[in-house]
Image (cartoon, rainbow, N blue to C red; front, top):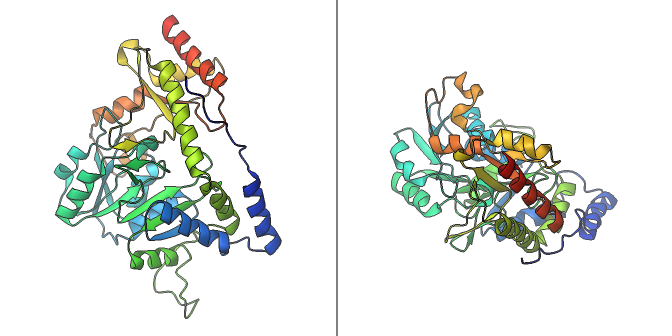
Amino acid sequence: MKMIPVSEPLVTAREVEFVLDCLRTGWISSAGKYLEQFETGWAEYCNMPYGIAVSNGTTALQIAVRLLDLQPGDEVIMPTFTIISCAQAVTYCNGIPVLVDSNPYNWQMDVTQIESKITPRTRAIMPVHTYGHPTDMDPVLDIAKKYGLMVIEDAAEAHGAEYKGRKCGGFGDISIFSFYANKLITTGEGGMVLTKREDLAERTRSLRNLCFQKKQRFLHDELGYNYRLTNIQAALGVAQLERIDQIVERKRAIAAAYAEQLKDIEEIELPIEEPWAKNVYWVYGIILKENTGINAAQFAQKLAEKSIETRPFFLGMHEQPVFHKVELFINEKYPVAERLARQGLYIPAGLTIRESEIEQVCEAIRDILITH
């Protein structure tokens, strides 16, 4: 088995240096050199002209959808198999999320279903690069161009992932990232809006900062938000961006180690990497086949009894009670997403995991499936 690259400490000397510099100079709030460096550096890394740092990935999505200027009843097409932030951003802006199922092979948005969901009220498509693997973007972009739609690319889980040799986050009219603590690049909490258009970048900067005007600060012609990122948080991001390639290499090596040790277990399905993709394996998910007679929740409990912590897969938006209360997605069925939710979970794969711990997890999986 190929050795996993040695993990760096969770906090490196560069991160400490940059944060202390913020404290010593007094630039601790929502302005400063690290904020500018982080925005510019991340935008360049994703090959986008403009980057605007915000407080987290959810607020990045809310601003991205706000930029669409939706009218009540306007629609945004997205996968049902995603985090609630995606649909919430649309409903928050008085729009309607329109759902499609997942591709059973790569777990991403089933792009073959998008065109059939387009109506005269459709304004945008929101592909989500789920769990570190890219969505098939060419069909998304072709459909958007054909119908004059915007593309909001949710790359919150796909730092460093690639589609046909290009970084995820570099395809949409607007794209967003999260820098939460469990992401490949983290600022503790934090997010980023990237865009190709200068006008959208300027409006994003205004919206994140209560729409203060440059010439007359306390005169407002639009309602904005306090969605700012601090210079201290950005300092962490700048330091981590310096080692993004090493972080991606380690995540892929961890995934390769799991794949090697679990490949012969017929009762589970492992994550894949399409020929056109570079998967960064933000999490390492497995699917329990139905013929095992055990679902993900039951399997997670058995692993917990062996002191192995797991997390469940997303539950589709169409199964969320909060949306049923407002008459959304009533009687909608998406069988692939439903199977993923019931049979899928992800196992420990953090950057600090050791090879011995991977072996321990794999041994536990084998033991459970043998004795079940």
